[in-house]
Amino acid sequence: MGAHTNGTSNGTSNSVTVIGLGPMGQAMAAAYLDQGYEVTLWNRTPSRAADLVGRGAVLAPTVEAALAVNELVVLSLIDYDAMYTTFAGVPDTAFAGRVLVNLSSDTPDKARAAAAWVAERGAVQLTGGVTVPPYELAKPGASTFYSGPAEAVEAHRAALEVLTAVDYKGADPGLAALHYQLGMTVFWTAMLSFWQAVAMAEAHGLSAADVLPHSDATLTGMGSFLEFYAKRVDAGDHTGDVDRLAMARASVDHVLHTASDAGVDTTLPGAVLALIERGMDAGHGADSFSSLVELMKRQR
Ligand code: NDP
Image 1: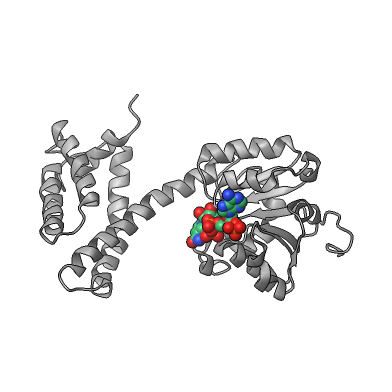
Image 2 (image 1 turned 90 degrees about the vertical axis):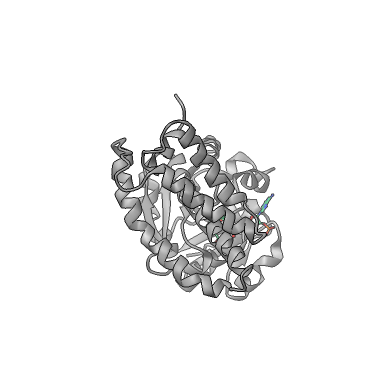
């Protein structure tokens, strides 16, 4: 194969460059090594490559050298700005013919701008949004949103699937980032709701382990709520036949006071209550709490 013998590009399907060795990039490189890939690495902090080099990966002396070895280049950086920092000073010609799979998280607009920047240099960007933590890579059920040219996805599908299943969203490079951020919108608020419950429990001598079973059941059961309300929301139906916003206000008020009575932070329930109050002020007290989504939408 000669990927590491002559420094020229390797277009074979079992050779990859990984740039960025945080927890995610390290796990990705390890997954490729597990599958017998030849793996070339680069990271701003070279010491993070030590374990992988011990397993047979090659640490390139420069990022330009890392780009030179393989057609397929996986980027796993903190954000898209870090890509520009990483590639500062690299001549445009070094990108020609490369497929840059950017698995760093960022906004749809940043992903689109980066795809244009990459295209100007004769390369192709695939935007990716990995939906699992590093320890779930290469396991059943792991999935990544992808967008960008479908031909590039198909040409490198086998290599992409070493990491996770491919959930292709379309040609627009921003789409994978969009789907990722929509998922993160739900993830972060749901996780913070758990921290809120744990903080409130702790004030009463209970632990996270005590809160876990019911919180788990609540979140698991959310699927049926989402299914029920998604249909109605898409139809613009906020009938208050199952729940009413006035009931939601009373309920969230109880949560807020349970927190404040215990001396616990109220930022999160306070924000929820503030949104509900806006809905009440807009006259939606007898409508479903799903009517809040209309307040949250972009106002045209
Ligand atoms: P980080 O998000 O902390 O990314 C670390 C990598 O970014 C390292 O290679 C680091 O280099 C590099 N980096 C940070 N700042 C700069 C900079 N200014 N210039 C150049 N390089 C920089 O760790 P993760 O590995 O956890 O995440 C990587 C990406 O994967 C992120 O976008 C994250 O959102 C996404 N992701 C992470 C998940 C997770 O559970 N960890 C889950 C799903 C997605 P150095 O080593 O030199 O500091």
